[in-house]
Image 1 (cartoon, helix red, strand yellow):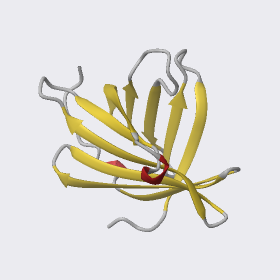
Image 2 (cartoon, rainbow, N blue to C red; image 1 turned 60 degrees about the horizontal axis):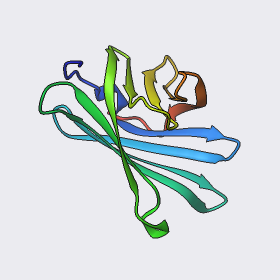
Image 3 (cartoon, helix red, strand yellow; image 1 turned 90 degrees about the vertical axis):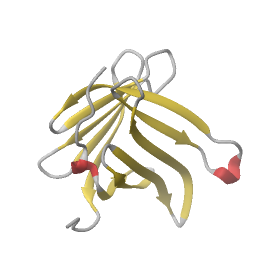
Image 4 (tube, rainbow, N blue to C red; image 1 turned 120 degrees about the horizontal axis):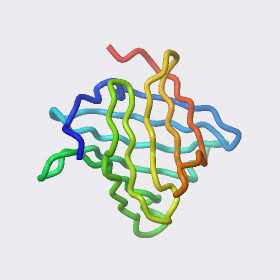
Length: 138
């Protein structure tokens, strides 16, 4: 497992333009080592997809990215744990393994924003979100 590190570079509001609409993601940190995020795909005034995320330290060390997928109005959401398996200064990988997709989620700070890559069980990129800051996070 990885030791808990600082992911403060992820804080703030982000947008990624995509053919299927705009994906918006916002992250906050209510206490050291805990990060709360929410995301939504918006197109033509509707919101067909939402997600909620929590990064928190585990009781036995390491950290986990918890994904809550699904619109509450569309039925019970799914809660999926993605243990954080790789950490670098500007990047982390959360990998749950198994045959479900996405199997892994990579977050990376770039020179122009942030990139989030969803990977299939073989490690191949399925979808890449190239985020830009929505506003200055001071």
